[in-house]
Image (cartoon, rainbow over all chains, first blue to last red):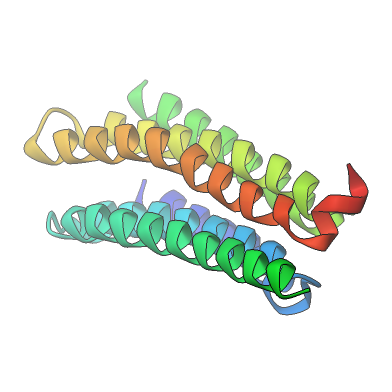
Length: 92
Length: 97
């Protein structure tokens, strides 16, 4: 079972690279933010799988805290993009 | 039997991850990318975590995984909705709709 889980980790790593392509290339800020959100979710799943491979319980606490931080970061960056855009419109 | 179910759930989850990333690369527009990525990502993460729950059995860590699933199910669509609303205000979102 452990070998299968390691293979799954590698496959998720490939999809992570595909999302990273959009972060690097993405034409607008919104594209990059969406791709970063996806990368956060995938990292979370990866950490849960690694906790099962290494048989360490405390990795799941890290997963919970990472989910909280990723959600908060996405919300605040989205709000920042929105506010900045409003200021630009009112200045014009 | 439990191993087979775990492998099945994890393979379906990885498939949804792959489809979501493909949509992230191939779609032409920021809003369509949000549509494709968010749904596939939520479903894939939840399927893989369900597979891990089957593998851990009945322990205290199972409760933590269930908590992660509930949290993801609530927060992931919320974050994507906030991002999509932020995109809709910019110039890119305006002339497409």
